[in-house]
Amino acid sequence: MSMTPRQRILAALEHRQPDRLPVDFAGTDCSSLHAVAYGRLRRKLAIEPRPIRLACLTQQAVEADGEVQDRFGGDAVGLYFHPRQWRRWDGGYGAPVEVPAQWQPEQLPDGSAVVRGPDGTALAKRTAGGHYFDPVHFPLADLASPEELAGRAQVFERWDWPAVMDESVAEYAARARSLYQSTDRAVSASWRMHYLQAGQLLRGYEQFMVDLLTDERLVRAVLDRLHAAYLERAGRFLAALGDWFDIVFFTDDLGTQQGPLVSPELYRRLLKPYWAELIGLVRSRGKKVLMHSCGAVAEFIPDLIEIGVDALNPVQITAAGMAPERLKREFGRDIAFWGGGVSTQGVLDKAPAAQVRQEVRRNLDAFAPGGGFVFTQVHNIQADVPAENIIAAFDAARDFGSKA
View (cartoon, rainbow, N blue to C red):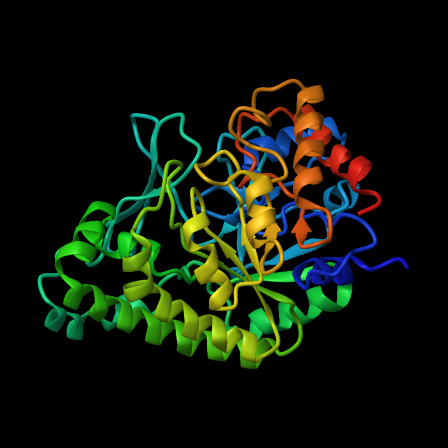
């Protein structure tokens, strides 16, 4: 029996056999495309030129047009935070880009660009010739003791909810309802909440990793306040959005390509309890949870299953211990895999199209049997990926996954 895209995605997350392979084409801001690659793809598809809207300002990843999603059989669509007003920006990407009106990169003489806060502090920077706006300001870098947090409450109020995305919760909910009613795709709400990564961005990457090993009291004080802000915000979102979405998309990178970023013991003691409560709140409202965690994260998968994660993304199949066959065999009954369809390192970016198709088929053979798999590439498609390879990958998914 034929399924709608929404039914197909939900079947995968519930480990039911879908009518065909579920596909995510730019349905989250970690399964999207850099604006350069997307502009190149649209030109290849002879789509009428028009501005490209960014879903993620840091990664310069796009919100895909409906007609492009249709072309590649996308079954999911992202629900992102929006500003009340958009403006056009020349990012140097060969096509005009739409960004929040309050987001104003300043071009510097050396060819780099910087985004400043209201007080002039540099918050993010794109290097000359670079493709991303990397964070360069860590607001709690100078924190010396938990007691100093008493005067820093404003840091947590909008953390991971950028101030330039200035729509109200009511406006966000109204867009969710409109999107849900206008599409039969599964709606994935990107809430940009995380704990390990948030600590790194609040304190500085290196300093927070040191904190985790040397100052548990400070770590808990920071994360307690962050967690309280997240729970309050999630409660507001859940109440306002009601049934007008299907999935909450969370992110927290736990791995490098060679192994875990932190020990499983440290994760279970200092990070997992926060996630368990937040995910429990979402699941209590009947919503699915998709967790993005890059790298070699196989050691954490039993923990993700235990706290209620329905699906793992991006499934970085080239990282240590992340072979598709192993993941499916050991964990495929209890968690779905949303990604891992084709590697973006060395295959999608560099291999000939025929090899791209071969890798897609090989990964489908490992992941797809019995359901529990949503096809998409490993993380966002980067700026150097040829349009021909994007087409080859998703056409292969259609060809080889027509009978799931």
